[in-house]
Length: 205
Length: 161
Image 1 (cartoon, rainbow over the protein chains, first blue to last red):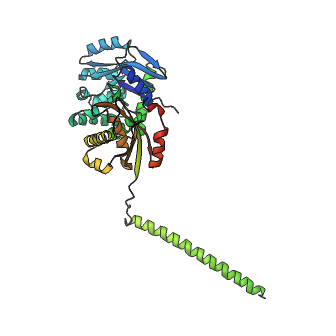
Image 2 (image 1 turned 60 degrees about the vertical axis):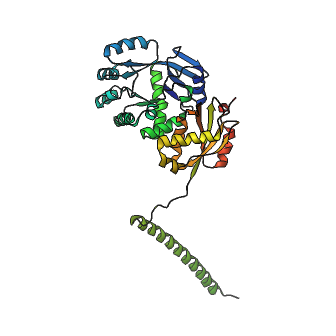
Image 3 (image 1 turned 90 degrees about the vertical axis):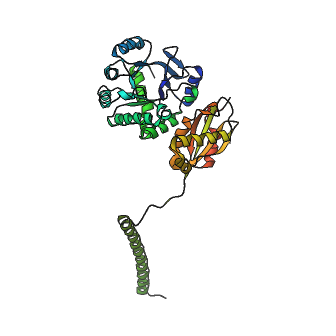
């Protein structure tokens, strides 16, 4: 069975990156700042994704309106409680991102809202490696809470260059170690959840 | 000439002897099993330390320049120490036992309990001596012979052109 491996968050938008994704066996990737809305190449699909950093609800609404027509996937990095709550309940937002900037606004209520509105939480895996231990601890606490509440977690690479893209086996092993869950569950995060998200937004895989 | 009653009695003696041996054996087996259960209950039987099992991870390198064996081994050890710590490194003891520069592939030997850590680590390495690179685990094997076979067989698309 050919499992569609999808990297849901990447900043790597040049030719070399797409080639690397193909070599590593990925079927699709959501790439920030892609020139076209969708690129199909040798059975590989690259779609444009937008990550919106917002402090106020008004700005977020404005940004979502602009980006929804241009991108397939919209992720929000909340920089205030108000934005975090709005992103959790708004239907146009596909994911809420957990990074050091947004970690302070991801509290228990927010996680419960994500659960109620079936919204996935995007966790860039490189933040769990590169950040200082105090920040890492804060992120891991939120991830544990999300796992406790059965919130869908989606791992992304947030690769800026071709050499930062992870091989799928390394991805699952690293995710398993960092989140303390079985490798099979991490594989589901990379395949099923991401595929559902893309299909929901009209990408045929 | 042996009479018929004597013959029958001889056969009966042999048959009873064989049956006796079988019964005794059966009793011994049952006794051994009971003793094992008793030991388990009274915690006399402890888990023995097994032999150190190893895993051989075959990996490919995609890089801008050709990398050497020493550089890769040093990078693996340094990043292991940084991420998982010194104690874990000495327990796992990752060794780059074989590296073929012409096809940029190698084999890492590691203790079997640290296989997952090693696979994760190969993904984390992005740069060796200032050269951008990507280490891709291809397969994991239990024997060196099979690992070497797979080193030359699999994934021709990962080889440098």
